[in-house]
Image (cartoon, rainbow, N blue to C red; front, side):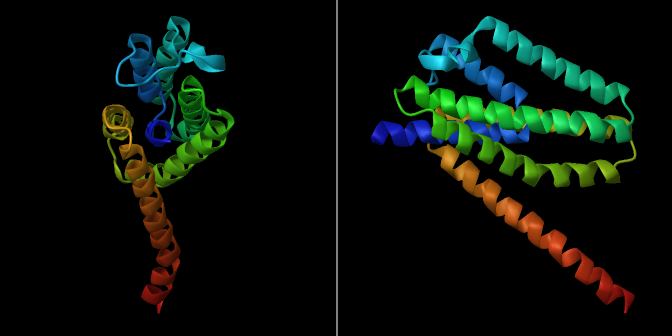
Length: 199
């Protein structure tokens, strides 16, 4: 049970990191699993591919493609095409990494699919409106696209910290929930505030 607590924390933290941006946490987890470092492994079951070279290369190519699309598409096309793609990748990666973490330690893997997808989606739902608002306020396109670089860095940092200390995954999930509640309360209060100003 002690080990299961740690592995759930690892899977949960990786899923939350994927909710920020899914690509670098997936690459980090695969690289750590390949080297057998920090207790990250996908050595058993259906999720062995998460540490394979072809998978890591595919994730790296998708990451590069996302940046190319961001730099070449107008903002309207970006929001309509790239953002839904990142959402889908985040949910899928969170589900796979959590399920793979459980399966590698002989635990039932299917709860990882459900909880990992939910944790990634929750985190993405928290971050997406914040990033969209920041992009809308920035006039310079380079600064707007730089936000993705910051999110990639934050996702990698979070995944690294959780890999080093697995129980921090629970803390990351709790902070994501608190931030989501704060974002929702602010968005709910904003229309009321506008009505007061109009009076």
